[in-house]
Image (cartoon, rainbow, N blue to C red):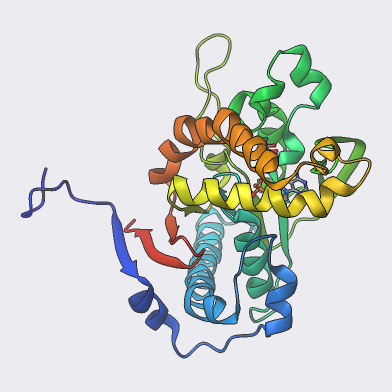
Length: 317
Ligand SMILES: Nc1ncnc2c1ncn2[C@@H]1O[C@H](COP(=O)(O)OP(=O)(O)O)[C@@H](O)[C@H]1O
Ligand SMILES: CC(C)(COP(=O)(O)O)[C@@H](O)C(=O)NCCC(=O)O
């Protein structure tokens, strides 16, 4: 079927920055400039104006979705004649390495925490579910960190199934960007929050097939809402390289940093190294695995070259 203009009908309704911003003009903004500075990721210039224009309507929209889900739970419980099952509302946040998923997730968490009733909002990143470096090496895929096969998908699915079952405390393993590896024995507890944000490159991957060829579950089967943070590949490459240059002076300078050997590189050599890691790992992963999942998100937020969101596409159903 095509629309009168000739292009296929889109399942998304699209907004530019101004029309999106007008959606929640009357909702007060509960964050201060200092709060936003604290939530900012390295290289992400998000400020109070951006939170006001983009995140305030988003928080309001998510509030409507969460309320509607709670009402549906209550009606279903009445229908089934049992108690209302209260399980976390799960929001997935997907997008490339260095696109700013962490900042988006942290800002959202802070806004949602300030909703009426001060809900408990937790955030988990999927890097904790990467196989440890030793296992990636054993499989010969250390240079494919972040690709779907580098994750312990079964563990991630088990974790989400337990969260969605309403288990009182579920724990997630922990990844350390400094040592570039899983922290042995470490875990973070997730105690049946009202909302759980699950952030990661591959959270919108379709289900994998099991050894006998049957499809398993997909991570997104446990999502109530999903967000894809989008930007031009050339912009994300630039952000990745700029972040690498800044990390050289901070994280890489730490002796225990996996990238410590890059701390002493001059600008040209550091740009060459970052560009090479981007071109051999992160861009192929973006093009082959992450970008193709964009159309599965409930909401796609598109950034311009200065990190400001300028286009929002929301699923009609
Ligand atoms: N090599 C590194 N050393 C220290 N911190 C890092 C390194 N690489 C990424 N980070 C930090 O890890 C977080 C997640 O980064 P990433 O997975 O690229 O997602 P995004 O940029 O979309 O939030 C960011 O806060 C980033 O600054
Ligand atoms: C740890 C990551 C795979 C991100 O994982 P996520 O939390 O998105 O599951 C990524 O930041 C990473 O380290 N990629 C490997 C290539 C690189 O060093 O940039």
